[in-house]
Image 1 (tube, rainbow, N blue to C red):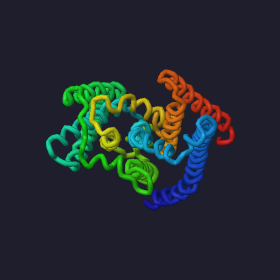
Image 2 (cartoon, rainbow, N blue to C red):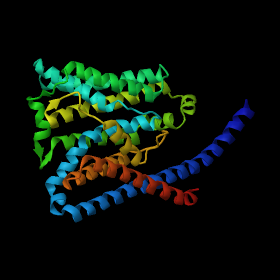
Image 3 (cartoon, helix red, strand yellow):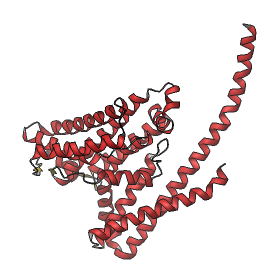
Amino acid sequence: MSERHTVHAEAKPLAAEGDPPGRTARARRRSVGELRKHLTLIVALLALLLVGALTKGEDFLSASNMITILTLASVIGVVTVGMTFVIIGGGIDLSVGAIIALASVWCTTTATQSYGVGGMVLSALLVGLCCGLVNGALIAYGRLVPFIVTLAMMVAARGLAEQISGRQSQLVTTDLLALAQERVLGIPLLVYLFLVVVAIGWIVLERTTFGRRSAAVGGNPEAARLAGIDVRRHTLLLYAVSGLCCGIAAIMLTAQTTTGTSTNGQLYELDAIAAVVIGGTLLSGGFGTITGSILGVLVFTVIEDLFILNNLEQPIQAIGKGAIIVAVLLFQRFGRARAVPTLT
């Protein structure tokens, strides 16, 4: 007994002395990598602002246009927060746009039943959350491929939205519209809601056990399981977070467009995934930041605003958007490759 105690007493100081330097080195490399990616996106944003100033001058740099950019970024930004959690956890969600459509149709249908703003908000959140839970349950407990499950949800949710609405746009005339129309200090309430969701997402990802477990599950599910993490339950929760964000986005989009329709949220999944990847989150999972994802959203939104102000046709916008995405990713890739020797 005394010998065993002696062995443990000697082993503990060695572990205590050996682990911190390794953890510190990894943390330092991660911080440097995050900073580099964020700086790349900030440079891209500054370049886009310069292009806007040179091509459209005061129209682009006006306070009203800056607020318009933030407003446009709000809805897709909320979706991107949820997508960031899913991708960090090693998954993918192709159904976010369709869930937004279904939630918006459901909440506007609720409005026709005189349930008021509270009923509309609650119904949108519940629809989003339930869709996310269905995705998560099939992936985590049904052990199905995330791509296929969320693709099936995308088709089913969009179809159900069409069935409920009869392919008609349902107008909203309730106090929910104040979310887009009312302003505080000249900024729409939508933007403040967006900032609240981003702040909560950042705190959860960076400062809580849930965030650390998300990275662990995405980086190495088996190691996470051996470390005592319930990987299946955590995966379920990640998709629930994404669904809840879709419910919030549906409320914002309905207030912004004054309608609930089955065409809401089209291609939002592609924009959200692209923003997350451009923001530095690994598609393979295990690493990512909310800050990077939101910078990615802003890059996309500024690009779209520039295209609109310069009256570019839709095909030209699509081509330019794709080219810029590739350029930013290549810049990040080459920058990381050059930095590898200094980090190891």
